[in-house]
Amino acid sequence: MQKYDVLVIGGGTSGCAAAYTAGKLGLKTLLIEKGIHLGGAITSGLVVPVMKSGENQINTEFYQKLISELKIIGGQITYQDNPGWFNPELAKIVLDKMMNDANVDIRFNSYAKSAKIISSYINHVEVNTNILSVSNDTIYTNNNYQENSETLSEYIEAKYVVDATGNCEFSKLINCEFLENKNEFQPMSLRFIMSGIDRKAFGDWLLQIDSDRDVTTVEVIDGVTHLSTAYTWDLGRDWALAPYFNDAVAKNILKDTDRNYFQVFSVAGTVDSVAFNCPRIAENLDPNSTLDTTKALITARESILRLSEFCKKYFPGFENAYISNIADSLGVRVSNRIRGKYIYSIDDLRSGKKFDNPALISNYPVDVHSKDKNASTLEQTGEYQLPIESLMSNDYDNLFVVGRGISADYLAQGALRVQGSCFSMGEAVAKYIKSQINNAC
Image (cartoon, rainbow, N blue to C red; front, side, top):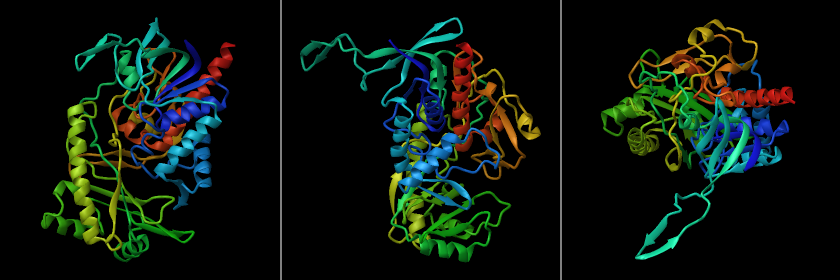
């Protein structure tokens, strides 16, 4: 049985931060990831840029290192005073390097199968060693048979376990208690990238039609045009792109729901690519249901084709554009949330309540999407803190949960789920584990 100080399950934003920080602190660390690369939302989900979350953030060493490593290979830019504009493909390479530099052991195509529990302590975790499911029983194929005695899994002993799966998959496996969700699901998204765009032509046109710099920005950096713009079907704002979407819906080029949320960002390290934070699937679908997520994926890909044709028809600079990447995973804003040692509330957030051991400091707004028109929430707040206790399982003494599955109520989680905060969560947990191990010595 292999022994580690820290086992991190899930190699997304928070899991990478936890594993890297633990490794740099000298803790023997294993990171297991069910996919074939690290990065989670940034890479598989194409979620760029990392949104700014205030000037007084803490536990940002991992994030700063990620910025600097990506910059070296041309996969990062600082745009509109935000250094979090990344290239998703190059991030895969950089995250591998960072884990190697921190002496973190990585296993791809790996997941937790079971765990040995002693009282309220996770003693060890069973991890698969084969990609495909096979059995030790006799296998019959084309009237032939053979005995298969290959080892299918091994047991990992770890002093601390970090569930960074996003959906609390490990915590579900060991029957942790969760907060009631009351079917409170934000609509899922499926991001995509188009390339072959004349970004200068598109940017020049955007500046001509839209004077709202809270919506549309264009900046030339080292001779390359970078930009962002947005539109939603919600009323109450004079969206510059509204006439084009209205016309496309009237002509059946788009479905009405295709225009419920539209946001685009240029991609660092490219001259002709734009990432789309859409389509947002305007249905009440459960991210825990394979039937619902299958429907979401199919619906989203159909919408992506329509949106791409719409852009080519209506937007200057898109005449030769094409779909170059569709995210490998749905954008899930909220799903399972653990019951932690402290349940962080929207009242805590709005009041800016202070804590003895904050895991993060942020001012990112309460951002809760809705499938319905004029029903989404974007509430600006002051600065707030999240306590480390909201990342601790209430059921197990050596289990932490980081990422969107933290112990927070529905509205508070809507502010805390963003990547900058997830980086801080992972880093904070690793530092806390290090202090606990030091105190035990």
